Image (cartoon, rainbow, N blue to C red; front, side, top):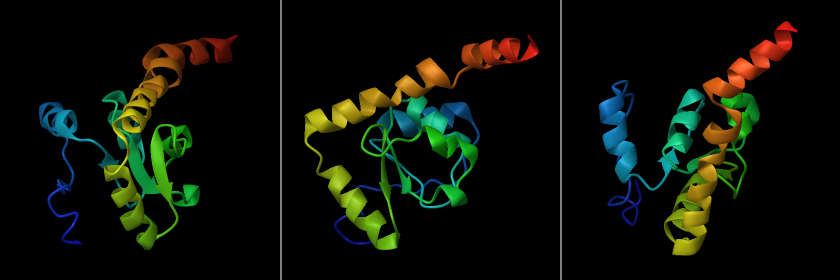
Length: 126
């Protein structure tokens, strides 16, 4: 990892305990996932944590569709893009970061939650 980023990134791996996840996400500024990502997108967004990941939708799970570059996430093209995107993210003006984080809650609040899923299920049954 580049020296200028080493103090800013904590690599945690797979965690399944919600208390452990909460401890990490409550102190996180971004959720960075360079591989195929799925449900963890919704988890990060529910904590108002913007997602940084690659923009190749063919190599993600369906949940990738909720990400909007510059709205609730920062997407990049390749490995070099990851480095420059993380550097840019860490340099965002406070107001820009706050807006990005605020936008994250729209997905779990309005479109991807159990209430909306139940409503869609009921509509499909009619």
